[in-house]
Image 1 (cartoon, rainbow, N blue to C red):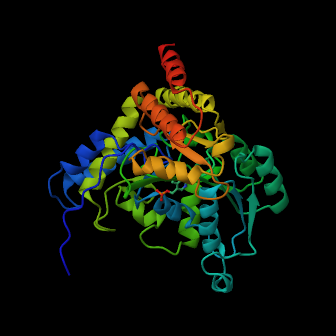
Image 2 (cartoon, helix red, strand yellow):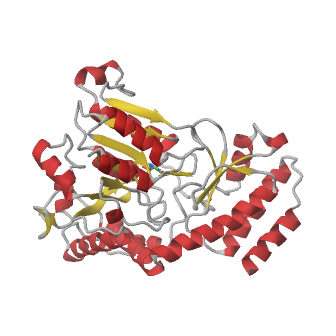
Image 3 (cartoon, protein in one colour):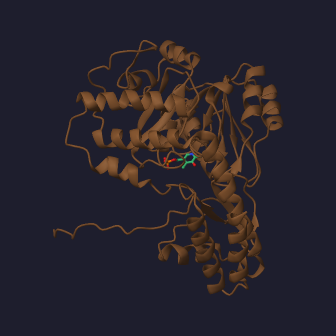
Length: 407
Ligand SMILES: *Cc1c(COP(=O)(O)O)cnc(C)c1O
């Protein structure tokens, strides 16, 4: 067995759906800490401060608001852990990620027999999946109709579906859950840190989950934010959940949430990383300093500039998220999406295809909120299209983009 050379990973433009361009301040906070264990007072203080900043950033007084170590799926696994076998659930799916959420929900809700029948993709009788076509949003009417018909205990959807770049109707979802006394669960992985919303405006949504490395602009495998309303925690207390490290009550203790109140951090739950804590802490500081409304407005502004540029190249945009453009290539290039994306990625211009059918191109602007970055993305994308034979008037398109930024 030989020892390989030191691993070197190049700098890229992360112009995809996420991970986003990690802020240099976050990388600095991650790498510049001293070696300290997870019970050092400054690490513990950092966790408490992060918990408090997270509540602020997410607009909630939910006591059980904290970070789950890992990525988005870690937070989501914690969020759906209160679903027990046989629970009646309605799941709304309109793209790749809500599709994977649906697998997780079906694994939790399946009885032992149902899980054994198809362990990787169980089909429990108690879960109804409402499929909304790719490229369309989940509307309040769709949710209302399904909840009225099925009368479930739980309902779940993605707030922003990153697979198709669609914003789903969170107000409609909340209202339908309220009306039918359903406990709502929301995958807010792509919306936290981009959209200007507050959890406490949607009281029928009892559980929320996000991820570290999209709108929050921290590093993957640091902390996935989650938030539980007291009603969800009461249920967990009464019925339990079948997980140790993602247990909403046990995990919250290390963030100083004890018996439903802010209190003394408990001795040991798992070994938290002082580096991850410092990175998460810094990412939250950046979010709060930037301001939710200002950031949401900036995403809208820069997204519009880029959208106009790719439309002028002949692309058809089918998304309405402000951090991500999902598009169809024009006439002659249709069907060559993966080839075009592959060519860009080979040059460290990190755009993405869709991960489930239909094949489309996804270009994201996470933490790229300035005219230089947007212009660079438009320029590189135009080059890629021209390289594949498209007729694109790059000079005019970049000139128009400059005029847009000049106001
Ligand atoms: C990215 C994403 C996830 C998964 O997050 P990971 O950090 O990759 O685990 C889940 N849901 C949505 C809506 C996402 O965009």
